[in-house]
Amino acid sequence: MALEDKARHAAETTRGKAKDVVGKAKGDEEMEAEGKAEQVLGHLKQAGEKVKDAVHSATEDDRR
Image 1: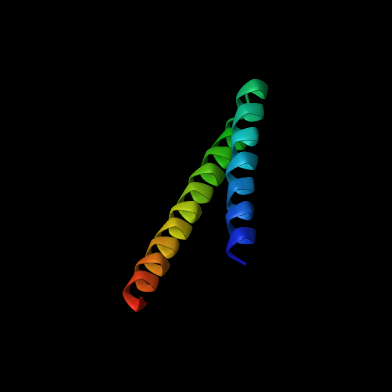
Image 2: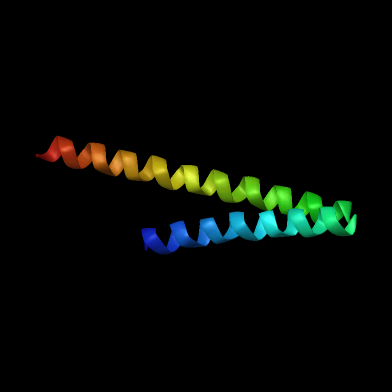
């Protein structure tokens, strides 16, 4: 499940970047803003996954 989440969050970030670039090229400020928002959301979700991984790793180390 974690790998699926990571892939989904990375895809969200990439999709946001694409919207941002296309919005800039077309002069569509709304699309550009949506793209930036998707990128931020994707990055935040990726950071959350990293935190979960770190906590999991730390608790695994404590069990040993």
